[in-house]
Amino acid sequence: MNRTKWLIHPVSILVISILALVTSLFLYIYWYIEISSGLKSIVMRFNLDTGQFLTSQIWFVIMVLTVLVGVIIMGIFIIFVYNLKTLRLYRLQHNFINNFTHELKTPVTSLKLYLETFLKHELSRENQLKYIQYMLSDAGRLSEDINRILNLAQIESKSYTGEYVYQNLPETIENFYRKNAHLFRDCDIQVHLPENEPYFYLIIPPMFEMLLMNLVTNAIKYNNAAVPRIDITFEKKKKKLIIRFKDNGIGIHKQELRKIFKKFYQVGRADDMSAKGSGLGLYLVDHIAKIHKGKITAESAGADKGSVFKLILPLRN
Image 1 (cartoon, rainbow, N blue to C red):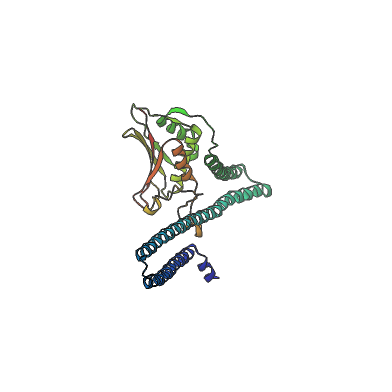
Image 2 (tube, rainbow, N blue to C red; image 1 turned 120 degrees about the vertical axis):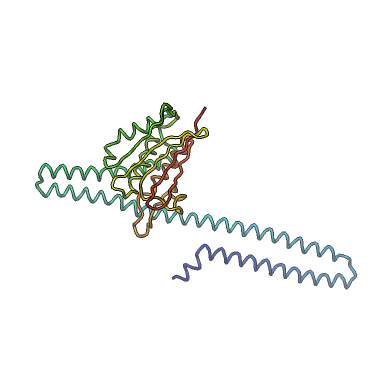
């Protein structure tokens, strides 16, 4: 079984194909040269002056065959790379489905247990409120996961709705976090407003709020501090507005910085369920930034040294 898997592996197929092509080319050239040599001996026996023609013809055929084989090898290589990317995407999707299913099952199972507790036991008012709070928390998690999938479908199909509106971004961001303060009770979110300088920008408010929510929930999720802290600052630099989201979280390894915005990518090993999140949050952030003509980047000094996410937007004069 292992030998069969090895034989059908893309690398094996590529190597075998190249060897077959090179061998065929060698045999064909050898065969052609042998025939041409025989023809030359016949020409010389009859004193025919066509040796130069035959020599030119040989090298012309060799050159054409070399080009053709090169094109074929390049085509095989392109197919090989494409298949590798497809295989990698399939594995990421498979890991995402496993982890996402686990994320959905956990709050559903909890809700079921809490409801059974309500049915089977007489609870005091205090315990009732406590269990209701737990259920609301689990329902919120469930709603967040479902919304993430729906948002992904809207963005990828470009069917998102909403009109562009000019808004002062520092005020918009401060108002958003103030409005949702109840969701971040255990966090310290500081929005450092620029002094006497508004930054108006054309945004789709619901989409931009989705970006803000994903950035903050991501910073909280990957944070082991007693009190997660997020500092949001604004800087104008060369006709660009740079909004920094700096946290005191677990940081990001250098090799993962370029991967975290990819679809389905999850920090940690998905095969042992240590991967966190759905692998969609930062992917959505990246796409929403692009919808607003901007881009998102990430920086980190390493493990346990926090992260800085930079939203870079072009400013008009």
